[in-house]
Amino acid sequence: MSLNPDQPIKFSPTHRLQWEEAQQKFVILYPEGLVELNQSSAEILKCCDGTLALAQIIATLEEKFATRGLADDITAFLEVALHNGWIAQ
Amino acid sequence: MAGLHNNMTTLTPPRWLLAELTYACPLQCPYCSNPVDYAHYKTELSTDDWKRVLTQARQMGAVQLGLSGGEPLTRQDLPELVQHARALGYYSNLITSGYGMTEAKIIELKAAGLDHIQVSIQASNQQLNDHIAGTESFVHKKQVAHWVKQHGYPMVLCVVLHRDNIGQMADILAMAEELGADYLELANTQYYGWAHLNRDLLLPTKAQFEQAEAIAQAYKEKVAGKMKIYYVVPDFYEDRPKACMNGWGSTFLTIAPDGTALPCHSARQLPGLDCPNVNDYSIAEIWNDSKAFNFFRGDDWMKEPCRSCDEKAKDFGGCRCQAYLLTGDLYATDPVCSKSTQRGVIRQAIESAQQCVGSGTEKPLVFRNNKNSKALSSPI
Image: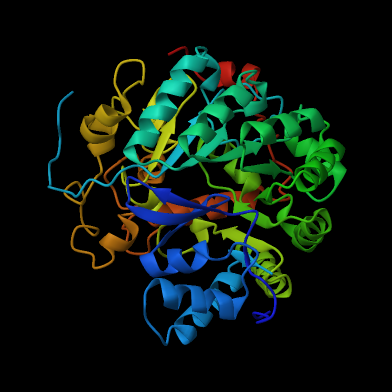
C-alpha cells in the first residue's frame, strides 16, 4: 500500500483531527487512541480535504510557508499517515 | 482536601475519562472487572451530575471518553450524555455488550455524536459465547456488529481471552474479519475482581498462550492495513509488569457509577485510599489534590527492588492492585516482575490453575450477578 500521486487524499472518515486547547496541539483521535501532532504534521493533514493530490498539497504548503524543497518530507509523512490509516485515497 | 504533592512530581492533566455509568448488566461474565461487591453500590449519578463531570474533566484536558459499565445501554440518558460529550469535543467510545442495542438506537447515538462502538463477543461460537455471557446473546451481538459497521462507525470487536476460548483464536480472527472489524482487541483476562475469584478456571497454560499469540501475530500481518489487532498481554507469563495506567494519576480518570473517582477501575479495593466522590469535590480538586490520586504518583512510595531499579520509570513498579491482591502489600513490587522476591505467588497461581484442569475437582465458575455479589460480600 503506497500513495497514488494522481489520486486526491482525504482525511480518514473514521478518525478525527482536532485542536486541543489544553495541549496547544492538534491531535488525531480514533477508537481508544490519540496521536499528538507537531505543527508541520498538522499542516499537512489539514490539506487532506479530499480534493488535493500529492503535488497540489506540496505546492499549497510551499506557497503557504514561502519555502521550497518540502516534497520529500511531505511525501514521507503522508506514506506514514496512509500506513496508519489516518488518510485514505 | 489535603495536598500531598510529596515528591514534586510533574502533574499532567487527565487525557482519558472512563465513565462507568452503571453497574447494571444483563450479562454475567465471570471475568468482569467490576468489583465483586458491586451489588452493594446502589446509587447512580444523575444525568446532571454526569454532565458536570464531563464538563469539568474536559476543561482539564480529558479528550478520550469511555462510556462503560456494567452495560451503559441500560442508562436511558445515554444519547443525552453522548450529545453533551460531543459538544465538549470528546472522542466518545461506547463500550457495550450489544445487549439491548437496536438499529434505531445506533442511529440515534450517531446523530448525538457518538464516535465509536466497541462490541464485546465472548467466543467464536454461540454455545460458548452464551455460556460465558450467562445470557443468550451471540446472534444479536453479530447483528449489532453489522449495524455498527453499516452506520459508519469504526467497529471494534473485543474478545476477552481465557482458558475456555483461547483455543478458538483462529476462529475468533476469522469471525472478526468476516464481521468487518476495523480493530480487534484481544484482551487476555486480567485477574482482578470476578476474574481473580475465577482464576483457577480461567487462566490458560503457557503453551495455550504462546500458541494463541503466534496465530494472532501471523494474522496481524495478513490483515495489515485492513484490521488493527490490539493484543493485551497476559502478564502472568511475562517477566516484567505492565506500566499500569501509564503511571498512577498521570493519564486515566475513572468515575464509578456512584460518583467515586478512581485512579484505575480496580483501585476501589485498595485500602486507605479514601477515594473522593464527585458529589463532594470538583474534578480539578480530585485530580490535583486528593489523597487517592497522589498516593502512587512519582516514585517516593517505592520499596526495593523497585526503588533502585533502572526500569522504574518504564513500568512504575507495575500494578498496585495486583501487588495488593497477590501479596497483601500495596507498596510491594508487582509480583509479576522477575525481580520481585514474591514471584512465587505467580508460580503458585499458574500451578493451581493447571492442577484444576481435568482434575475432576473443578468448582463451577462464579458468574457475575447480583445474587453472587451479595453472597460474596458484606454490605458496605
